[in-house]
Image (cartoon, rainbow, N blue to C red; front, side):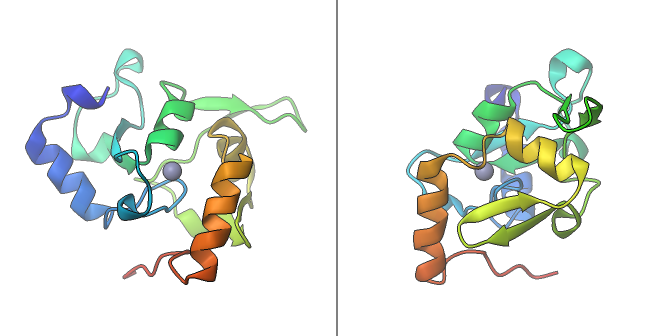
Length: 141
Ligand SMILES: [Zn+2]
């Protein structure tokens, strides 16, 4: 619920994320719909509105994630928690192949599926950004 996040927190998490979606890594300048804060653990699950529980996300990832905190690994039937930008390292759970984001772990795979990261229009956009060297983004880690 982005409208519940105070402006100073929105600014803090936006800057911390270098204006990138913390799930699919698209930069907010490269999409038309504005990025927004995501409660990693949704308010309805008891997640607080703090920097430690917020991620900066693109509209599509945030809408697909909603208030979910886990999903089912269709290969094993196990319930697996979603990727957390605050406690997990992106590179340990995902990799980029062309325009595709591929899950490297169970967490990465269930997050990719739940957040619908393989929608054709998103993959085409990421492929186009890759051709213009806009994607994947350069990070300062
Ligand atoms: Zn995204």
